[in-house]
Image (cartoon, rainbow, N blue to C red):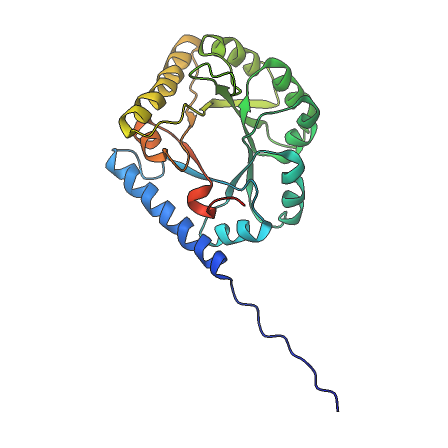
Length: 243
């Protein structure tokens, strides 16, 4: 007589439970810091950096109430976007942009944080389907003129901003930067203030009302909130170290 083998119900793994708890803790710490620095309670958005993460890990983060996810590589992002299309996710592209990737980025993302030249802005505009709302974009700034990092020089921000403003399928919302890695919180704060000051000057010079400051990651997010960040990009503090 053959016995049927019934598989037990699959329980959440320890890693999945850990992601949920880390995501909840991160959100609570972010709210505490926002209040501490005199910011409005919903002034800062948590963007979970899902580069290198599985769709299951992303779903776990969603169970903690996170629906904004950032990807660096289009070839990695597209299968996730397709697999999770039934979920109300806002996908952000946060990595360097190659010309041959602009078609897919323009069609599949809600916001792009890393525009640093006119050619890329023009291509994103041209490939954005007219059936979609304008693609929200930030200009990436190379604050410290680091050769290893992408981004426009501070002196060239206004020229690029004016060009983006002329494109009907893009909506310029603000600036993004990845400053030098610093360990001292006060030095981190001063570095982030540079980007905040650049946004103020840009608005005054061009008569704009840009409000997005995409700055701060797992190692320096609190200093970024102190300096006025509106989007912090968090990966390790939610998902742990990437394998």
